[in-house]
Length: 245
Image (cartoon, helix red, strand yellow):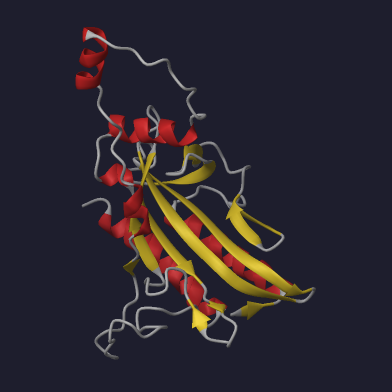
């Protein structure tokens, strides 16, 4: 899928309108910005609507509150990005987009527990369209580590990801060393879960898949900007409808 600079600017405006509606924003302040083909949440978002959060990879980003259970006591936060690559001065091609869902009120650190992503294919040497992960679904959901472990264990895993490499320790022997070895608890590693692509648009009922052919019926890219903005709106409204349950 390709777009001109003017089309991208209009697309960013439409994303802003969807976020204004979903997040129940009280004024028309810009919530996203478009810079060099990248659409992200604006760092100037009103403080009443936004906060800084830490991704599952230990990176900081902005997130907007969903009014769940209400505007005053939000428990869920949404972060987003959309990436385009310039082919020429007047034409860009779609690369990827995604939503990250966080949970936690303002008195605590919000944790990422769910992602929804859409990644475009690339062409190999003979022109065949290849998707990231070969057979992986596109678009797809990811369930993050915090959904499987407690909050304390999750933050321990983040510390492990962002901590510098430990210096080599002097080996100790004796009863004290044995005691430490018995009581130390390893950090649970659920990094493998991030590699599980759960299809969000699988057309298996319309086209049988042999398990090997690529692209498969669970792999596609947006056909146009109208389809992509409908996807953004549907995903955000689906979160808003399901999370209160």
